[in-house]
Length: 231
Image (tube, rainbow, N blue to C red; front, side, top):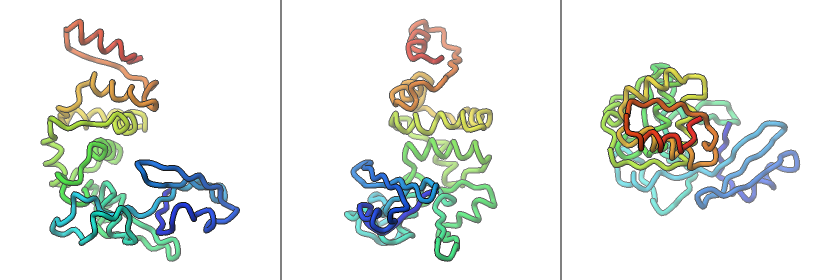
């Protein structure tokens, strides 16, 4: 599980004491930590603030877009993907803190973004939405459903996003359902070859087994697919 803290990451070794093995690392110019506390592996991060593109949007709490971090749990929820992974647990009281109806959405089987889909759905979140839908067999909220049915043909996907998220649709035990979802929602920005190129561009996807099926008769396309080592 993950923990969020308002304490400076660099001071965590002093706070956690000698019983915790702590590894501090930098990602996208922010500090994070992995800790082994009494045999449990835990990730720790500071509370990231609301994304700047949501500043001034009706219904979004007022915030300073120049501040990357916050002490507000509510503000931090707007960094999360969907309502049901924006739930917090207070470790002192074991109470669940639910700002956006995540528990309700879990019970009703609805995958809903936090904020307007057209503003908050990044390429990585798009792939995660397909993965969650396949894994849990949940429905998209009306707002998210409309957005996913009209994906921008010019969207670009980072190789790291594809290599991390897309293969997990097929290797986490729900490949059949994942394939149905991907076929149901036409994704014009991803051809099979483009997707495989992105997967192979990341070291984590360098050796992911891929079966390539195509009805294309072009010899050039077939050669290009073979050159990507589909295995």
